[in-house]
Length: 429
Image 1: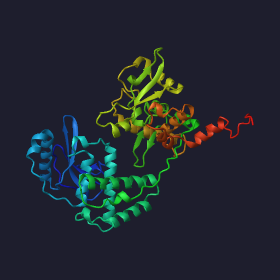
Image 2: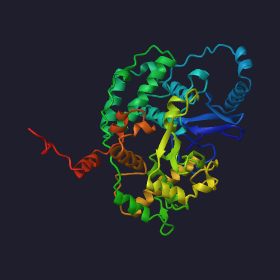
Image 3: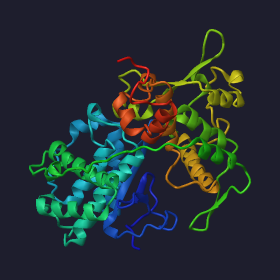
Image 4: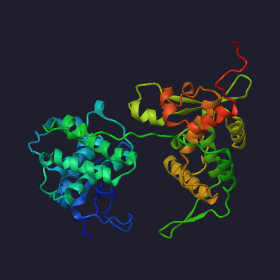
């Protein structure tokens, strides 16, 4: 596979915009990227005041890319002074690929005024750019020359064919909608942010109805899973032949903490001893967690109060906290899980997720649930036993809880168990 010319220069990388991998050194090292040369782009990665800033560079010539990188670095160091001397950009962009790269930069807040910036996760940006690349691949397969195809040549008939392609290719409504939402957002960027005078065709494209139909994990299955989380037989052999040890001293505690708090995985790995609240009698009252999903979407600029979740203390959670020696660590700024390990919280979350899947298979349980279902299970039980789920801060409204998290079958079983009757046989008259 051919790559762009590369000589080592601080902050300069080559990325494949098809799979978002850095490929300047070795494709093998980066999991076998084999996408063609036209998918490659020089990228600047600069750290200023501890903040990592990136930008896709326009030039495909090494020397020009280095100049662009240095200009970008100067702009970051002296944003106000440099901006006053900038000449108006007279270059007119029309190619689809140009706007695709602009969209990638915009998602990373490059060149976006502070008040318009949104914090997006690296995963979201990578997936979104991937969806737009997929649209580009479709155009190419259907006769479009991406080196010449302008954004104005993509008409409603091309977009209609792509809609048909998505329908035929993705039977899952969720996957279909992910692809279509990315296309809709891309066109919103073109028409609103770039102010292109083109019809916003995807605006008329209908998303498919998604029926969440949440399922919860049975008590028996969860207890069976916990019973096999041991150091014995903990090696997983991947398809590549690589071996992974899925056991850590904190694996079982981490999975139980997910189950007993009902928090999302990244939120669980962020819980600390200082989040534990005790009452006036010195007894456990609750744990105060943070709704990180809400914070990213609605409080990225920290102008609102942090959205807290008040986690009730079940008997199981109390026993777990006692095992974690919470009394000796009350008020201490230490993580409940793996605090003594030099491990990033995101890496820890991924590790727990992989371990859950491995041990679920070790327990010979079905593949129809993942670690995410622990949250659905918790909220279903909380709803059935208290009806106060949204009041504790788990979700903003009851409708979100009922639609996305409550296992309807579990509700029916509980109604039967409680002796639901249609007629009150003791009623008079």
